[in-house]
Image (cartoon, rainbow, N blue to C red; front, top):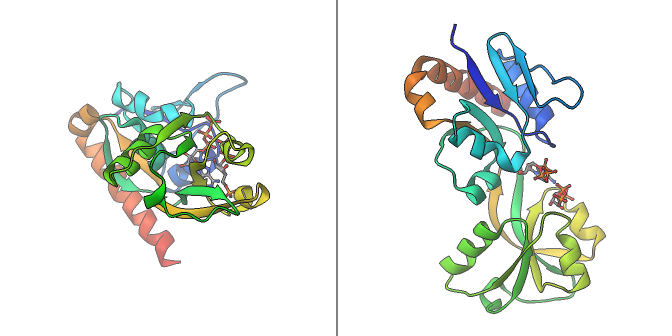
Length: 210
Ligand SMILES: Nc1ncnc2c1ncn2[C@@H]1O[C@H](COP(=O)(O)OP(=O)(O)OP(=O)(O)O)[C@@H](O)[C@H]1O
Ligand SMILES: O=P(O)(O)OC[C@H]1O[C@H](OP(=O)(O)OP(=O)(O)O)[C@H](O)[C@@H]1O
């Protein structure tokens, strides 16, 4: 039997990831207590932080699931065969409610974000120099307090920005969960991975069809 190691994000994508894997025939067992690994039916499940999933997959774990935002930010050497039909949100430039400015005029702006690479790449592709303040979460606070001129962060319902008197000024990209495959696994466990991708595609098409 092929044994497969899987890195699953331990945050808000975990439940949807488990549901998705169940639909394609993989039952995820939750680890006991504070343990970070579980075993079931030839699978080993690892539960790192969402931001670290691509690091595990690049460095030997067979497959993983995380947001496309994390993949772009971390830029690890992994194979991404497909987007998954959950974890949908977007990454946007966010401003205080009363500030009217287009991103083209943000040269020299101080921008707070959990995503320095995505932010740097976005502005440098537009030929703009900005100063990036790397934060680890609750990024809206940086715009609200004025320590930054704008922020780049995830928006889903828009409730967080509204609650903090901020507004979405420009969408940089759409985001969804993605499947990650280790580059060597892609070759050495080709049949398993191929079968997994086909099942995932069928599931995805079924979800779209509803
Ligand atoms: N509000 C949201 N709505 C939908 N998807 C989201 C939202 N916020 C984040 N996501 C997606 O879920 C992924 C994981 O989010 P989660 O909040 O668990 O991670 P995190 O904030 O990096 O966690 P932590 O820092 O606690 O490890 C993100 O990378 C993104 O793809
Ligand atoms: O548009 P909404 O539906 O309100 O969702 C957006 C919020 O969700 C995420 O935060 P999270 O809860 O992950 O906290 P964090 O910012 O501390 O990572 C994101 O960073 C926004 O703050």
